[in-house]
Amino acid sequence: MKTKNPKLSSVRQKKILSFVFVYWKRLALASLCMIVTAGANGAMAFLVKPVMDDIFISKNREMLLLIPGAAVLVFFLKGMGSYGSEYLMNHIGETMIRFFRDSLYEKITDLPISFIHKEKTGVLMSRITNDVNIVKGMVSTAVINVFRDFFTVIAFLFVIFYRDWKLALGAFIVLPLAFYPIVLFGRRVRKFSTGSQETMADLNSFLHETFTGSKIIKIFNLEALEKYRFKEKTKQLFRLEMKKITANALSSPIMEFLGGLGIAFIIWFGGMRVINGTSTPGTFFSFLTAVMMLYDPVKKLSRLNNTIQEGAAAAARIFDVLEEESPILEKENPEMLSGKALDVEFDHVSFSYTEGGPETLTDIRIKAAPGEVIALVGMSGGGKTSLVNLLPRLYDVTKGAVRIAGKDVKDLSVKSLRDHISIVTQEPILFNESVRDNICYGKMEAMDGEIEEAARAAYAYDFIQGFPKGFDTVIGELGSRLSGGEKQRICIARALLKDAPILILDEATSALDSQAERVVQKALENLMKGRTTFVIAHRLSTIDYASRIILLKEGSIKEQGTHEDLMALKGEYYKLQTLQSVKGLE
Image (cartoon, rainbow, N blue to C red):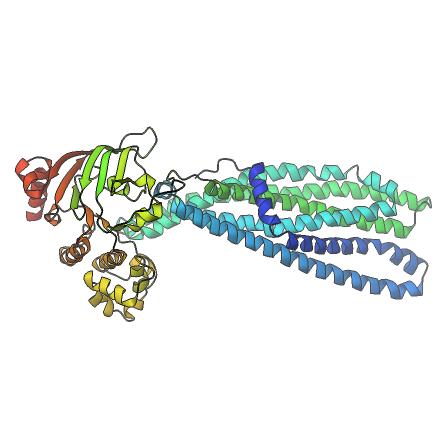
């Protein structure tokens, strides 16, 4: 996802500020601590005059005892104020970051499958990790220092004008020039930061793809190609980072030079006033100390502005996701689906993945009675998976309607609808949890007896008992410690435990060898009993039991009937059967 605009809109800025001001009590206390710190910084410059005039020139012994004590108190207050402001602002920042992470994950999880398929996995991961960390730097670090430096500048300005207002006016001829780099380099940093964050997201996506596909890379001997592609991406990231570093690095020296001009002017003009007797050495050095200490927070503001610009670019990318609108809309008062025996109807359904794009499905008309098994067959790209994805509203139809128990799925509560649908896919989707947790995904409140019963019906109980910790054995990422047949049977056990009246089997046995397929097929027969089932089949030999077979070609229904009817017709289905039989003999 490309960032629409790297600049934060005023609406988005208000949203971030509203998040911050939820914690106004902590913010007020943190501001008080910053004022104490700033006051202590100003007091240090203020104490230079009595040190010079009263101790070193007038040799006042009372002040020799009093001023060191005051200095100790000033440094103590500065330390306490600094600790309090940093702790409180970081607490606000970390709370905000947690909120952003939670909100991003919730939003991405709630968005339809079309959004997940449209975006790269690594890019979405980068939003939650990399981008949020950059915003953290803006909120937790930059905001603290901006507020602290702002109050410090105010404190030093008070000292400067209190000590010598004429000299102060002269110093401020140069000071406004020092703010120019803040604006100039801030814009450049935001631009390069946006490019850098997008490149980092692309790099994360690349890493996810290559680590996932490492077997293919090795078998096809493409390690050198992937290394080259990775180096090209890191080279691009390096260039953007160096441009950002250059902008950051230049801002400080330019401000130091401009500040140096101001200091030179103060030394000349202030020195003349001391020589002429209109000012004392203590007043001059107190003033000079305050000015030199003033330029330091102004110089820091340039770097902090760069950090804020980076954070603004990252926040814009975060809001791009948070403000994404879902095309799967639910009515204000949706109907609830109920029942154990449900019929399904595709009523003149047409579907396109993109608005105004080519139709993937055209005028599909299917009626499935409760408990009927409908097999969907045909060549790849015929629209089989697209059709079943319309049932749980992973996508919405372009024309027509999908009805369950006579109700349009768009009128139903999405949760209620999906509670009545189970699925077993070609690629088993398992999580790096225990066997028990993976089966419980079908029914989180299930008792041990129900879990074991589902495992037995899925022909999984025996091999699970052979694991070191039985049902408590952790199966690895995506079930990496299991064979293909074992993974599939755990997925079947999960679907059995859910006990939904509508079942989708998306080529559930096509990736298995013949021995594993026979066992899984038995488990599937247990799963299909009494359920309205849609079976997407690659191997036609596995669907002889289907109540009805529907052949899809180029998004349209070409043939339908029983196995015997379609074989007798000697059309497309007959050709597919004959072709697979010949391949089987070979």
